[in-house]
Image 1 (cartoon, rainbow, N blue to C red):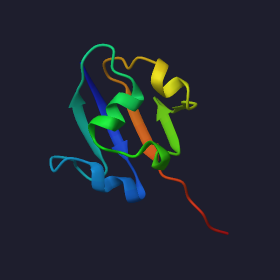
Image 2 (cartoon, rainbow, N blue to C red):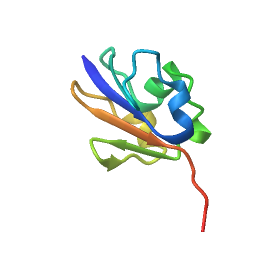
Image 3 (cartoon, rainbow, N blue to C red):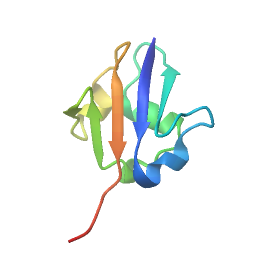
Image 4 (cartoon, rainbow, N blue to C red):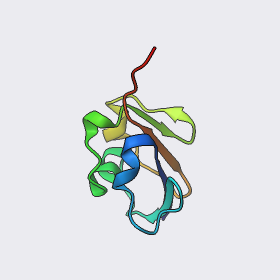
Length: 83
């Protein structure tokens, strides 16, 4: 199975070298969750503020419960501030 991982802003530094711009396609095992995927790339959970699976927001508890499927797109943004 494979998914596309997209990391934005300050999280892009956690992408592997083969990433193009802000995304990379990665192979995952069945039973992988969003948090397991982020942990694999050493993305600090407290910095993964906005996590989307196929464009739908995953609440904190869903990030450990929802199993990823082949072809999913996981997009992650850090907290932002501004005015």
